[in-house]
Image 1 (cartoon, rainbow, N blue to C red):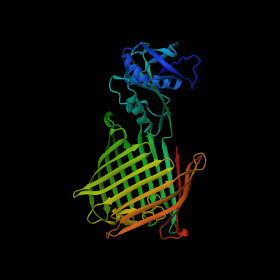
Image 2: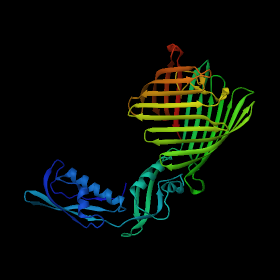
Image 3: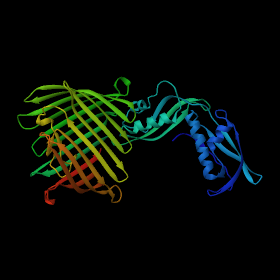
Length: 440
């Protein structure tokens, strides 16, 4: 919250009072003219609501101009010719410049992790818009909540100082597990993420997945943030998928993530792939992610020596109680090996089907839920999932699954249980998924 002072002195003035306005006199202003101040106030009839709104506009305009210590005081209310006249007294303070960031409330997180998100270079003028963007970047780290940001002058009346950022540390690690039962076997995945390794903002993730056809996948990723002091992250990934005792595929990826604007992340990198039995291949990777409030958009593409090899994209949107996601995955190779086929079906694609039950060249699927509140953080959600897959023989297959689930918050984390039935299957042939997601 910015350090601003709003003093309103209106004797015997109630919220629902409306008086005829005769004249407003402005005093103490030099940054803006009397006419500009009156346009900001925009008061045609005098009421508590219009006066507070007008003064709020004056405060914001001054803050945008670099004056965070602005004081506005209406005074000298008087009756004139059947109406009310009054004065607006302005104490503009000094134009404020920031040369440092100081942090309080951090216990594990290093101060430099928070300071760098403000991207302060030398001395810069106080700017609420830039500060708000920095606040979003800090909270976008996932393990911090900004309680307040206040400008503090080194000495009273001096237009130079620092920003005092008060934060609260949140959970910096998460665990997610999904268990399903089908084909007489238990399958699913376990995922562990930590976002603030050793208080440095480094990220480490691990994933273990098992499938009904005995496939096993192990995935690890690591991200080193702010390479050489610039807002560029470097990450690498290790991905190993075993099909049986004699065949597997291993992948190593390295990428740089650039942040040209706050909501968008651009990724560029390379990928090495080794198939056993088979050959080695190299690919280029380019992708991006856009996140803003309740929506999420991502895409990635892989390039081989013959051009684009694979493209994936997805979008998620949460609107009130409705959740919608749409995802696509296209493999553009002329001859697609089995391990590179697009796999659809299961807890994260089309529920009601086996994990990766349908495989093809390309697929588009959507998930729709309506979340009924059950009190507190608990909810009940019916869902419908749909998919369209282009098979290897170029025929098209339509997938449809529906069901219902329940999600509830417990001391150990959020549990979700859902049951889905695929098109053409009986109710008893549905698939059950149990999910636990918790923070540490």
